[in-house]
Image (tube, rainbow, N blue to C red; front, side, top):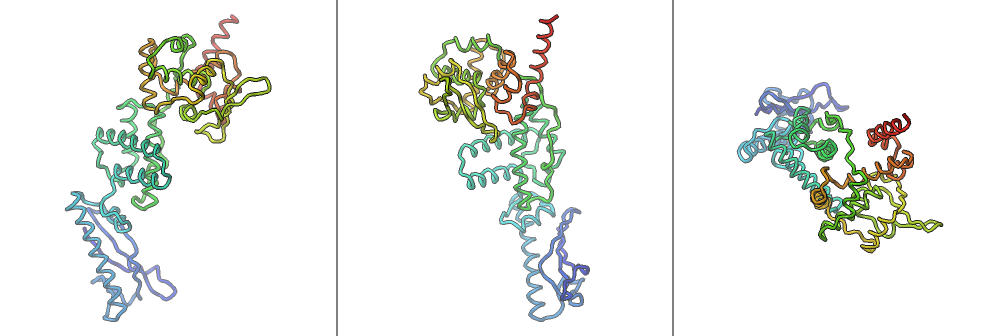
Length: 384
């Protein structure tokens, strides 16, 4: 490490005082910043890196520069000796401006952000979600030999490697990969705002893979297998929740918050679910309650026993095996099944879009493009 102080002569103020800058050089990389010290050009000794003379002003200025030099040297050797890493010039500069006394690694940052978010909003469920994300990301980092990657190395090349591991290595869907990257992005933004890094490569980063357009849903005969089958108590509750999703199109988060307060009756006595989607706050769903859904609601006295997302998905896998359905059932399959059933029963896509609570009909068309094409082909065969 090399430290020098120099006067920036082209930045004189109205009193003709010039600022003294510090330059850190480590392994050829530089980082520069203002020390806060100013003096007249003729007062600066460029060879000794100090203010000339023995006046009180010179003594105070030189003491400040000396203390800064000692502090940077101590920070540098703390990293080398205690953390067994050689900091870059930019990292050492960042350490000077923060209370942290060690290099900020990516996993360390993710944990810091999760804890700060919890302190600010006190959302225990969000903290658990962040902790699961951190665990998943840490395993992927270990796979690509980047568990101890530093924030300054989180460039586009690294992000590509991580995305490739999520999708091709772990087999995660593009949707889930985007959720993981969303967490990484907000964490790196948090780091950028606190000057841990000078550049945030993740800000404009996009997953370099196309979304799989396949829609997984159940045919009516498959759904009937679940409805008619008798499961053990635990699986039966999850099967009932899934059937509600298949006949209402409610996403997991909306299913979990569904209560009697969301049920209304019209002038004809028909019951409807009136709920605002959690994902799209402005999208209101008004869904007719069919007989089977009403039976399930009454069975549980309008308080559905919805498991955690993870346990619910685990139960759905067991349900699929038990009834012989060779599809990967998830909570989202129920929502897709509802949309597909409606389209196959000739419900206009505009109506389907409203029932699903989509903010725009183009969202519905995008998600159900393949289903629409299959239906068109079927209709044409009937005509011909």
